[in-house]
Image 1 (cartoon, rainbow, N blue to C red):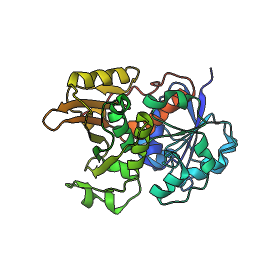
Image 2: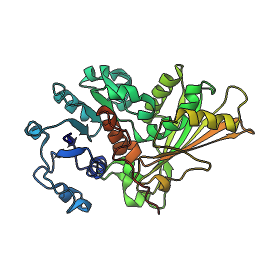
Image 3: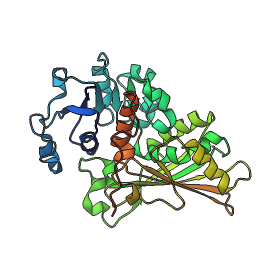
Image 4: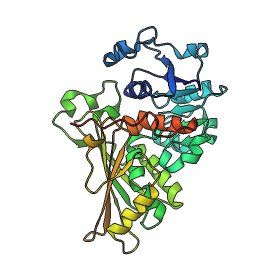
Length: 345
């Protein structure tokens, strides 16, 4: 069987470079096209020098796409930009995995309320599938458009999904305290990711209004088939990559740690990238991989179930999960090309 030809639309950011890093060694694909509107004509390794001698292929404009054979396209573009390309490619036969937030929510009205931007191509909401394979595997396999989840939502949703699905916890006050490395802010220089603001510092941001709050909440409502309220607060860590989320939920009745572990083991029995731990996870233990490490415990004193989840925000939180979704779309083993060993220390 010939390899599948893959296009990566948007090469200059962290997500585009991670997609190339993973796909370069994927046994069933060929990176046919990498685009950059601002750097077209240059080499990919000019933009990302660590690829020199490994991936030196030329960057093209997206307008050159019809010159290439494309079996699937990844959109590694900012929020508010991807929707233009989903519309541009609407008549093409290839499926799309979109790594922006433009189709992650239930409808355009919710998107506009949380992203403060008018949505320009609402038709695609009708056929977009939310791309957490562990939850929506069957829908993803049939999708024309996969909305790859946000990095924070991936860590929180995977962390608490088994308990929401079980119906054994209250859903009117779920609290998630999440911390991310600075690559989550993107590759462009901003005040928030200046060295002097990040180094030797730690702070909360997006308090009460972060757009990932509604993404998490909508998925919990879908899972639990009930109204959900999520208090989500992100924090910025002075590290390159990684997310650690601590989630607090209250059981509806008496529960034991043994019962909680049983729920998680059953829920994730077919999840190749979920590792259930006997101790709290660390971001270094998932660095550079598609793993999500989860630890659960129950505090009888406060009647809180505590869930800790760790992911690499650029892999399981972005490019790795996108490749996992691609594997499902092509009917392959979802772990194909994703068996990296964590880089530690």
